[in-house]
Image (cartoon, rainbow, N blue to C red):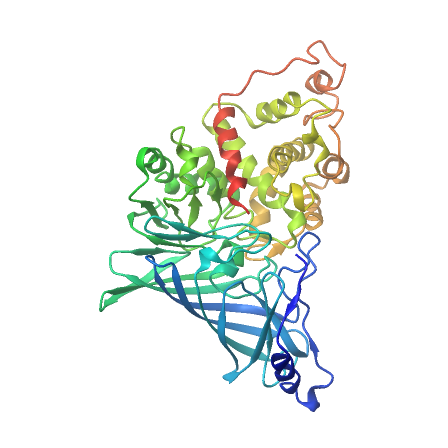
Length: 509
């Protein structure tokens, strides 16, 4: 993501003049947070507390007009700061005053306020923009905004926000959201959180959504079109809001048979992970060419392709598990992806166990035994897979096997305390793998460096499978050991559905 400055000489002069001489000690904020995989994602020098996004969208032309207001606090003395944004900007104001702006790289909006921002000061940033998002291609031709026959949908990981609102686009800076969208009558708008109201006038309808808990920018989603909406509450009173495109065709019934179990499944997962961390839950299935899914906070995106082979509750379990592991407790850097995907995949193992279609141990054994030592699968380190392998099968499957290895190392009592305690300990925050290790060691009283290093950070197939050392099962799984060595365990009944759900990573980029 190399950046090339795109700015006219006149604009450069305006940037220079915007900083008074008294601000000579102030400096521009960094154009990224320094993430090891995506160094230019996010920005330095400030933290965002809230996004207020107001949009007008015309499905017939894919024309989007918007005004986003950002509430932020400077963490440095700033002469200039960056926002991540890909669309065409017409005006920027900072604390009510017009600000100079320029663009660089794939999605850097460089803002120079009329008055510099002192460390600790509050800033209200207003950005006005309009564009045709589906035509805006970045990062070598990628767009997160996809048109549908009746509207559009935006969902993607690690980047998607820049096609509909400007912001600090990295999970380490989470904020609350208000999203208000005006669409022609007959269309609906789906987003995160709770629908707080609608109003209609002169052929247009406005939908207002609110997510009142901290949310990473890539977890914000937007869908516009014609949907069948179902609403309900879980047994514990949590609002459930699901939406299905009216044009899903043969996938419609399977999609409903899966997603309509959301309330039941979130209650079931609460038994393992603790209290659900948000004020609503649900999912949506738009009419878009996609076979993946994404854990967009409170309102999960499911591509219709997830249901071409029938219902799939396993993928619903996976995405709901992310509401704890990934959404409430978010990764601090993209290299910590195991904290998201390893535990969401393991939730599918637990669901298989619940459905009597294979225990978590049997699934872990199957993953271990079914991949020969020379399979490239084992060359990927789930604890630091690298940008190119961030969503590879190994991050999911070897990552889940690592969770089972952890379970065997600490015992069930400590393991389930860790599984439930971690989302409570770090609720609405961010975390790293070393921080998780420290927490697990505190709860279990065991040193876990060896087991986590083996399964997360060491390339190559571990010499022994994910079972307690010294057991008969460990001997049979070791190369050349035991009477059953080399024999592939019976395929668990849930395996095919779990494999189907593994395509979740296809929606990421």
